Amino acid sequence: MVFQTRIHGRGGQGVVTAAEMLSVAAFLEGRHAQAFPTFGSERTGAPVVSYCRISDQEIRVREPIVEPDCVIVQDVTLLRQIDVFAGLRPGGHVLINTAKGPEELGVRGVCVPATEIALRHVGKPVPNAALLGAFCALTGVLSLESVCAAVRATFPGPVAEANVAAAGEAHAHLKAQLEEAARA
Image (cartoon, one colour):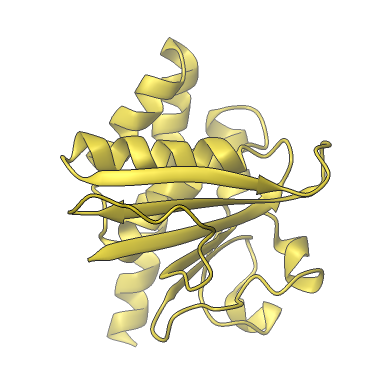
């Protein structure tokens, strides 16, 4: 089984780093992974897409992901600019960085206030680690522990620990949200 994730954001938000951390987490779990970006205009604020494939077997394909199992949207304003849901597999997961609910946005998926969580823990509006924590709660594809280890491998000391805290809070936030929805 290959699990494919497409991450949409803007330059400067850590979109590429998020995909790389997902792949490192997969490697730490003994799986195969590949992460790669595509860029339009290489400038801060320009739309950026990154991809991550995770598999229990060697991955030979090297093209962009056109039928993702999961779409992560780091910047909610992209919902009005591009079709971030293009090709999403039936039953696929959608994770959006916003404090609003999906019904307010008129979309299907789950929302996590990852930027606000990052501001509390990291002191900067970098939602990538928080979204990866939420990704673990949503998909179950990777463990939170592996994602936290990948964060620690990517960032130095205090920055890593702040991002780990953000990932943990987002994971708990989404897990509670999903449990509440299941009870309703």
